[in-house]
Length: 245
Image (cartoon, rainbow, N blue to C red; front, side, top):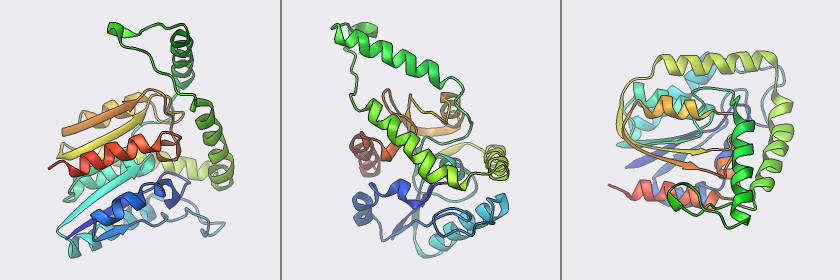
């Protein structure tokens, strides 16, 4: 008996995983995915994001699944990635799947990564090759992803934003980082080099804690991950990881 526990990102909702659900539903006896407290469309207007509420939600629902199922795989996106890592350090988790885990924020050097990628794209048009003669690829979908990211921010995140929520976001991240230990279970980390919110140092931080790790860095993807134009590539990487014994 096997279950999956999915944790979405800060000020977002369960739709972060909408493209993944049809692919993994037949792999588990139960897939648990709900909006975190003070998240989603139905949240109370005056209810703020609180560390205690978030932790209680994550721990209690994971424990409930674990009482019923032999194995519980945990998926986490952005802030949910930090929470998923926390569970992997404090609970008996099957496999750990992290998408742009926000163990640090913000990505202060994102503009430099973006400029570097654009320079590589210009070289590609001239038929240049990259390091060790490897051909440079450039996705035409990059601009579309940037537009989607801004649209997601203004439509989904900004209406739910407040200075108090942002303060509590950093409290959640600090708490998760404080409880980080060696993670011995199989772990998969997916990260976009053009991430607008999570710096690459966050990936180095959590990678250093993982013993059995597969880390994939997409050179032309931002923070949207499964909501990006290249979501099919990520889904293939996730399913390959799940199918590996």
